[in-house]
Image (cartoon, rainbow, N blue to C red; front, top):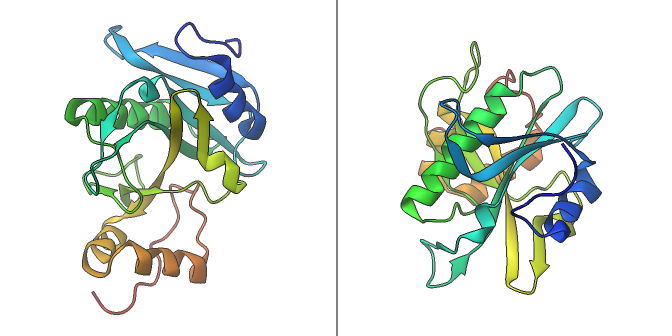
Length: 200
């Protein structure tokens, strides 16, 4: 797949490719071969040499409501995954979450938790997704600005049921403090749950 899209201005693609490398593959239809209202793409690299990035392209054409204010938000969703992981898993998750966002017309905000449900990938203890700013990259990657305003890049981080419970009980600020203290590998879908305190 080339680094252009019939749906997106090249500048947004360039914004992603500057940090994540060139687009390698793209998906525009769902498993039933129905055309999706946005694309999903895989980039050449991720946050380190063992990971790759996946993102929606085209979700930002829709103005989404914020549950925290009266403002509208344009956003694209990002996932980081190990290079060895089959694309089916991150692509499937992005399709599911992007479709949910369009169905509710509500933006995903930092600190939101989606799930928990079943294991995100077979054999994993991680069952939910946490919405974060893409802190593994330079600050300027988190927002793209064009003539229509800002596009926020929302990073979907795999977390455990216990971690999701911690966010609900203690807030996303306390959870992100734990992330800073313990520095788990947030790309690893097989990582163990963090040590959670205070006691849930």
